[in-house]
Length: 359
Image (cartoon, rainbow, N blue to C red):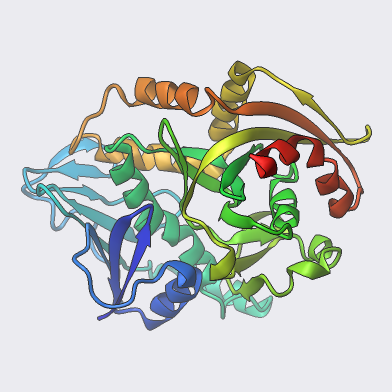
């Protein structure tokens, strides 16, 4: 098996697989956070690609069925029906200390699937396994890390952010509201650094990068030529027809204390900002978490692991962390006019960013 190490929010992860294409894909995806040299991992993830499908319960005779597709015994939890990843089986070690995740993928050899693959070949899509790997990356790497961090009172938010002269600007919103474009534009400023684009981790005091690639519409990127030296395009499929980029190491930062929260929305009205109470931002964050596919899927993943480590107070702890995180921050709602040049939009933030830079 090939293997490599990486770190997400100071959590050391080792990924190993017999699938060379997956290893190359994952190395490209996680290039900015790969670790040099072998370190003792906190989470070990093994992905095995098998040639033939198997009977779904031929290995579960000593397990108790908890719900559909989830089986438990004293040593491990087995998830045999992972949503949207037919043929994937995940096994989670219940040992204390380090967490072991073993995933085995055995694609179905049914006639229906064979015909489907032939149809994809006709339209020129069969040669790219990256769509499968993109979906797999969350359940295989991100979600085990997020779940482990939740047990340490570090939670997940649908949003992104940058650090400007060390102070954090966090942008939260639904898909398509301009978060990524605004983040990309703010990265052009001296003293700025990339935190996250789509998902961000937080505790009561700081926000942390979870490292997803930056997602930008190529048409919008053409209007930001200054970004060409800061971004490296990678072959990772992302939603909404956008393109994925890794941000240069020199422009990355792993954590920051947030000074400003911004909730963007698109409309035909002129671009403007208005202060809003922190309670409004907390309510919006909860709403956006409910709408975001990645956060909803993580909640399903976490519910599968609950028999291993129940955490009935997690929701209350998350609320308290949000209230503390926003306690000293300034909060704004930002209306962004459709079609406005991203440079003009970013320039209109100067009124609220100047105190951050001077502070």
